Image (cartoon, rainbow, N blue to C red; front, side):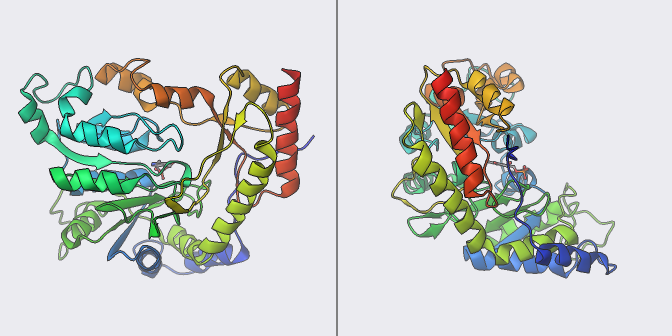
Length: 394
Ligand SMILES: Cc1ncc(COP(=O)(O)O)c(C=O)c1O
C-alpha cells in the first residue's frame, strides 16, 4: 500500500540555503530580505506596493482596517471559503453579508453580488448585535462598505461585474487571492483586480514561507497605514516606543522572507508542476462516472492550482467514501465546510441550513484529493485506482 501525503511543500537546496544564510547574520527580522520579497511581489503583480505579513489572515485583517471598515459595517462576501476571509470582518465587528456562489467554479456569484449591492436589506443576516438592524434600508445602504471576493481553489472570481457594481456604489474591493498566487483573469494577475489583494504562504500553498502572507495595493496612503499597523502601529518617523496607531505584530521574519524570495523565483516552475499533476488527475478522473472534475472558466487565462477538489454524485456517501480512501493510504478532506454553518457564525448571525443552497451542496459533495507539485504520476495513478476501487465496491 502507498501512503500518499495530503500536500507537500516543493523546496530545494536554494530555499534551505537562503534560510541558513539569514541565520548566520544578526538580522532575523526587519532586514533586507523582506524588502526583496516585497519587491518580487511588486514585479509579479505590477502593483506599486507589496507589504509582507505573517499570515494571509493578518493581511486580510489589515486591508479591512485600511478600508476603514468598522462596527456594524456591511461587507458582501462568500460563505464558500476558508473561514478567515469572513473572520477578519468579525475582528472589527463588521458584518459579512453572504451571497451564494456559482456552482461551476465555487466562486461568489457576480449576479448575486450585484443584486445584494442594489438591495442590501434583502441579504442581511437574520440577526446581528451591532448597529441598528431595524433602521430603514437607506441607513443599511450607508453601512455597505466593501465587497470581499475570494479566488477559490486558485481560480479568480469573475471580477469585471463585481468591480462594475463596486464602482457604481463606491465600494472598496478586497480580493482574497490567498489560494491563487500566479492565476490570471483575462490576462491580469489575481490579487490586482480590486483595491487590495492578499496572498498566503502556508506550506500547502503555491509558494511557502512556513507561515506568511502579502498585501498588494496601488494606494500610497493605505500602504503606509498597513505598514504601520503590521509593525505595532509605528508610523514613519516613530521611534521603537512610539505608536501612532493601534497596531499589531504582523511582521514576517527574515528567514521566512528569504525562503519566499527563492520560492518566488521558481513561481512559473512551481505552477507548471501543479498544472501537470492536475492534468494527470483530470485524464483519469473524468472517465469515472459519479465524479466531477474541476471546471476552469475561459476568463481564467491562467489557473493556479491550489487544491484538487472533485465533487461526487449526491448518491455517493462522501464521508464514508473518504474514510475508505483513508484506509487505503489516501487522505482526502471535505472542502469547504460552509462558513455560515460554523457554530459561532450561525449563532451570531442566525444563519441556518438552506440559506445558501449552492454552497451547502458543494460543501456536501466536494472532496479535496492529495495534491502538490511534487506528486508523481504513480501517486496520482494510485489515488485514482483507489477511487475506482472504492466506488466499484460501493
Ligand atoms: C481563501 C483563504 N483566505 C485566507 C487564508 C488565510 O491564510 P493564512 O492561513 O495564511 O492565515 C487562506 C489560507 O489558508 C485561504 O485559503
